[in-house]
Length: 318
Image (cartoon, rainbow, N blue to C red; front, side):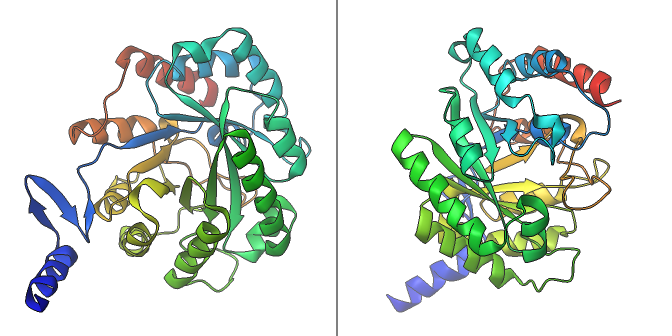
């Protein structure tokens, strides 16, 4: 019996196939993927204003593509992120059009304090609240004007609110692969913070974020190798920032470790304006789609809508 268990552990470390299903590190890499497009991440730091009407036209197109989730706005300080000041107006218009009755895509918005949480609850179409919690104390202050203790308290409010109102809570574990500020970081920090958040708040998803695109594929693999078996495949997401010219190695590394949920933005536009002056970019969603379809683990609903979204993004973002 001991030899059998040891053999299974050895196979899990190396990866193996059982009944035609590929497993790596004891996780199933043949399960369907979830793709999240993040126009919010693309728009929030763009140096040129984008009108509400242009946002609406873009979102209507994205909602026809077939993404599982659309991260479409945020309820944060309009002084800090003026590009998101019209999120309520955008959601109200989409609800008036009854567009959510025509799509299986679900809406996610970002919140960082109690006011944002209250504002998000005004919209039935919002299915999930995303909350940024940073492993880096410096970035937590820069991003939300709160230290980690205060952010943890706000996160408790968000978790309780989501539980009462039937919303999913998605925690973005920012600076999950290190930071540019000199704050201490190790893989164990990402794992331990995720463990603590999972135990305290039971979020639907912990999305580990490479906020400034500094992780190597090997680092991505190492972090997800530790996180996925501990938290469960259904609870882990990857929010990987990268130069659009980079390959898909980071995405592939996360998937090999068992991650099934991936964020991106059309044309790879975006990044966090609170992190650094230069926006490093997101995983290009169109490449995520191509990759996922190539694995037969995700299927686009409307290729025409995806093409149209890329054309609109080219017009909006240059």
